[in-house]
Length: 294
Image (cartoon, rainbow, N blue to C red; front, side):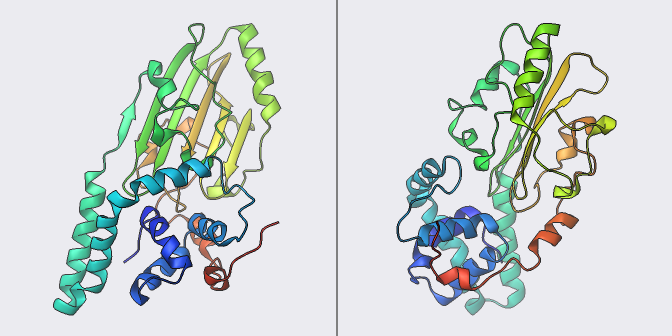
């Protein structure tokens, strides 16, 4: 079985001190072999003099993990117990059924949360957002407006949140501006720039064969961008597609109009980009050897 990121991060302090059991260490290393985010966390923990920031808001993230550690320890023990103790008592088939049932229950208990009320925007964006929406895996959300003001004509809005093991986000905001405000917003977005994006999650471009107005992307966690809304004058659509482990755990196409998605975008389970990125990533020496960071 594979451990989720949140469980592995709770185990990393013990792992870095070589204090885990053989089986727990093997499960942790199996996860680290596939998850670059957790490997980055491990590298940062093993630096003797921590003189760097891991990701945006990483200090706050670790503080929250520490507060939740006591609450999650029972879950960690239960998962490891199923992986280690149960095989001694039951035949292999029964073990597989037990583990599958536990994982299914954990995922089934998580619900996809959807909010389409524009006045709730500040709950999900910016420093004053609810705790689970503040960091969003360190992705840069400066593409989105700081707030929704009375003079903005909001055409469409949606925020989607899902967290079976690791948080995932999908949101979009479509706004029609006055001529003056439209030009001002184009200037603001133009100053942010467009990062190279072709090929990341199989993206080839955007609707209308034009580049986005502004775009921030990460080869692991996804995209945040603004585009000219197809078929509408003076209208801009802001989109964020944020996830981890190289794929969404939701059917994202169900929650967003197709014309808002990048052309070719594929973050489904087993997508080709994930398979490509996973090749040759596992480096055993990184697991136990502290890495000096300039």
